[in-house]
Amino acid sequence: MQNRIISDISKYIFVDDELQIVDAIFLPGGSHPEQPEYAAQLYREGFAKWIIPSGGISVKRDRWPGVRTKAEIYDGDYHSDCEFFTDVLLKNGVPASVIIGENKSGHTRDNAFFSRTVIDEKGLKIKTAMIVCKAFHARRCLMLYQMAFQDVSFIVRPVHCYNITKDNWYTTEEGIDRVLGELTRCGNQFVTDVKNYLK
Image (cartoon, rainbow, N blue to C red; front, top):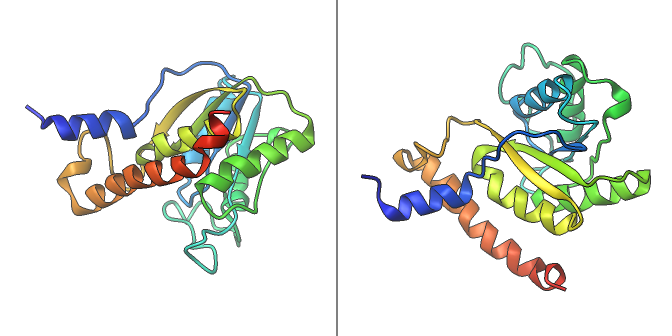
């Protein structure tokens, strides 16, 4: 039987909601094509009207790190997460007219709040949305996007990058580092915005 602490952390971090039709799909930044590929699939199947990719260059780096997987397919000269995600979306059948990008953010909180700014500037009315993100990043993405879009109902659809899942994260050093790092950042970043969120 799995340790209760492990199962509690797994349940908290790895959010995975039932698929439903929404107004928009949000894509927090990254360099794996699996995120925008899945978002493109969902768009083609009629699950959303808009896709909002987000991300500039991580605050941890001085330049974009490059494509993590499938670089033979996605071989553009990308300079930001948003630029890369947009190209993947276009190559997977998403029309440019439904993609609303945000390319200034350097971390997850800014992915959410800068996307809010872009949406407001466009005058879009979004009531329901989906976040397509890395599985171990799901709780923090949901928390921060909920703070930025308090009038929107969210679901999360995770993708598995780095082979880190709800069922195996505690079996490798990388999985433990990433998941416990997310747990810590959820607490730290919630403290930053909790007063505004609870107003």
